[in-house]
Image (cartoon, rainbow over the protein chains, first blue to last red):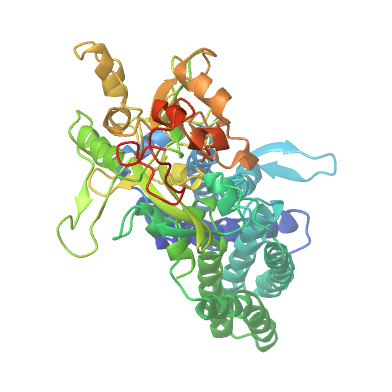
Length: 328
Length: 243
């Protein structure tokens, strides 16, 4: 497939946003049960929600560049019964709205206690809003992943690993950003976020390697024989039906040579996983915010490369009809 | 239930591209707007087409066959491109099974083209919407046309009648009989999309000539032996020799 930067930035930016919110709310929950020091809501959660919204908004803007007719985007909310893309379009603003409310409640320091647990723990409105946003964050990861995983013809994507990777890679980058953010807003939480970030990054590395090795062993289901229905072992295409290219030769091919593709793979394995994990470890031990920010920048660049490779690696069965492009 | 479809006879198609140009002409002139081209008269011309004819060489030289392969939307009975559409612009008509795109609802996200294993949907760079074969829906029901013309433009244009059009759910229709009698098949059956369009395979045409057919047994000249009989290596046209 042709990797479109609009979709690459959409999926990576909202992944960071969702991951950052999950990190914030995880810290909130830990603090609720007294496992972490309580944070000043105004500075930490409100600004954290704002950064989440900035990343989500960035992703939303990027997504519009993918549309031929962005002015009709409102129509995309209508087919939620069948289309994962439609579901994503509904869940994304719902998540953003919930994060906005969560941030506002913290900013206004509104502590309306809804229910008190038998242990005497007060559950206020921010916990309720945070829980709903937490659910929506996961729902959004599932929707985004399923947009790709539900396409059975693109067998590189048609696996549960696609959804798992979207969750883990988004989560990893979000927790890394949370570590960098907390270095300024809540230094007591740096170790907590960085620790979880390393764990999620390594889990993401494992599941991404699992996806890569699965895809390396994939046998194509369709062949030129089934594509045109001629059962002969030797078929050679002599004409594609045009000479100057078409939508089919542009949208479904990455037009990149194999060595470059391999280089991108090694770059993202290092950039999205190994290097940020090392930087996070040094950043925590040396207590330097700059290293943590660097860890996030490196990991985000790695994830952009990862997403580029995710698209480029998927080989569409329609490519069988364009053998000249396949053989380069 | 009606399921309109094309049946394309690969045994007859000569790869002349008349269906391609006729389709382009009809569909670029319709009310739905032009099928835009880019650089039509310059280097690397490209544009939106509903129908393409590709050519394949089967076998190893010198024992090869050339197969011309027209390719357009197959109007699948279980179209994978329809449920993924987020706006409902892609739909399959209940009354005749044609898969269509509502150009006024399409947002041009191209997701449907990813979901089609055949690559028959094309993005129009001018109108910024996805387009595909409509089976000339604006023509086959047009009562102002004579009945013989109420067929897709490609079918009307084909000089060898390689393209048949009809209802494959009507077991006695021309297309159903053609599929049944000539081993009609679907493309990429492994994906269970159940394409409505079928292709008829190449067929071997062989003629057996028996020994008694080489000589005219009823040739009166021969019966009467009035003419000297030339050798069999001599020219054998009736007007020239007479054995």
